[in-house]
Length: 156
Image 1: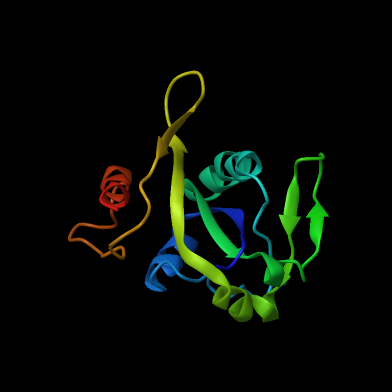
Image 2: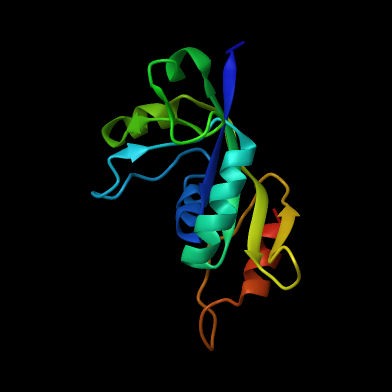
């Protein structure tokens, strides 16, 4: 049995759609201005990014969890991006396809954050592992509403 390490990745809806399109098995290629793919080593840091950056940038932030072959992952440096618990695994963009081939199992959505009302300002939900997450389909009258998008993820 392959020994694995658990990694976390905060993401927005566009990247999540591409993960879904892969069958929840791979991360999409980086954009030219993104030379590094950096999953993080702990859920707390991933949650912070999803809440503070992804929600502001795209209206929703997701925290994903996945496992990768530990021996393979050891070839990539762990970088401290701030405090002692702010740790990222730095995978060069040109090696992402190979990295994806060493993912064990499926990429799971474990938390969803949206702007909300009240003191915290966010609504947090734990989301079931993906199964048949449907791709976003245009609907008559415009794009999906936030509630429709939330319902779609809840179906996973």
